[in-house]
Length: 219
Image 1 (cartoon, rainbow, N blue to C red):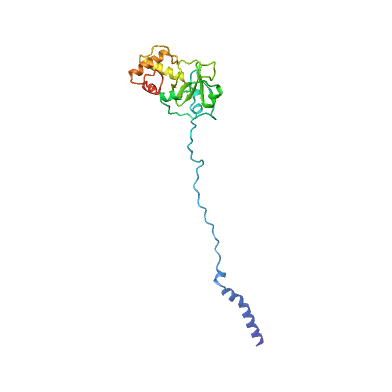
Image 2 (cartoon, helix red, strand yellow):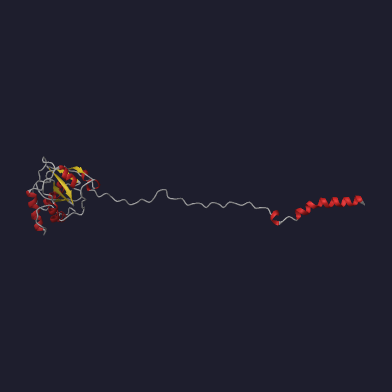
């Protein structure tokens, strides 16, 4: 009998691990699924460069408009971009131009301090202001030969003699001018201008102003 009891006890002890395994909690028996990493979203390619920003062109007549690169016998002698008054590209009327004209002598330094563009054309220096060329009296006493002492309207970045050559050619084609095409606003050219202006209802000034240049079809 004693042997039978010991056999039953041994069988009960051997069966306990199996029962414990079957009674395990669900949270312990459930296998943990591997957490998959989300796929990275594909980024759209970015443009390599930034949009071009609009730039403001410098309005300095001496640099941006390239007067020095124009053909002819004129040359830029001063292009002071740090000082001097600003200029107006729209141009003044001839009456306004006459009022603005510094018909007085100043030395080299004074002109440089007050005007950005000064050129040597033929026998004299001219300064540019608001669409007109003016004699720069006193800039260099060795170069003060002017056939006309007053403002000369300009367009297209032309120097004074180049404007006058175009005017002379236009007047010659119309029969008003018979002299030499020399870029000089001398007496014969001014007479031809006066006759043309009178015939076309313009102010008979005998000079190169904007209204005359437009009437001649040059601009």
